[in-house]
Amino acid sequence: MNPSPADIWNERFSQQEYAYGEAPNEYLKEQLAKLAPGNILFPAEGEGRNAEYAAKNGWTVSAYDISIAGKKKAEQLAHKENVLIDYRIGTLETLYYAKEQFDAIALIYAHFINTDRIQQLKQLNYCLRTGGSIIFEAFSKKHLEYKSKNEKVGGPNDIDLLFSIDEIKNAFADYQIIELKEEVITLHEGLYHNGVGNVIRFVGKKK
Image 1 (spheres, one colour):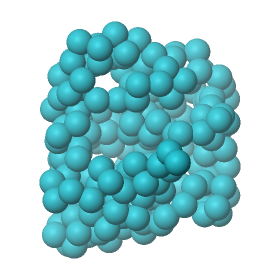
Image 2: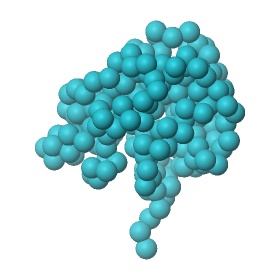
Image 3: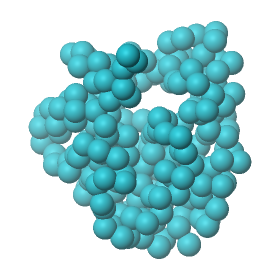
């Protein structure tokens, strides 16, 4: 029997080292610096590096993931840095966040293993306030070309789990686009994001 997505991530996050490091994603840092702190949600947050950074910078942080091992590592990191994170296990459909609860939602390599990833992104609209911001970075569909040359750069092997500019426009059709681009970047994030890859970067504001 094939392992479940939760089993796969639990195995990765059960090692002592942080799979993607303890430092936050650079694009997240850049974009959070432009916003006044408020309530922020981190879907698919893994081991908590980005949530911990936001909490240290004055944000009230909520996060969720399907990995219990990821939550444990995130709580260890939060304790080490003396910050609080409301970290839950589950999916958006099961966690019932309040309508317009958040001022920002950060999706950093949230490659949902789901039959309709774009619908998952659309559902986040419910818990983001009008005028709130989406911050997004994830591998593009072109990334497979880069991964074929260097496995260490990481990312899904399944093109259906990767993103395109058009998919992001569809998912956030009612948002003001502050920035939307596909670009080649060099990653240095822990054990599993190392090298040159192709990503989609997006910042949008809910109308």
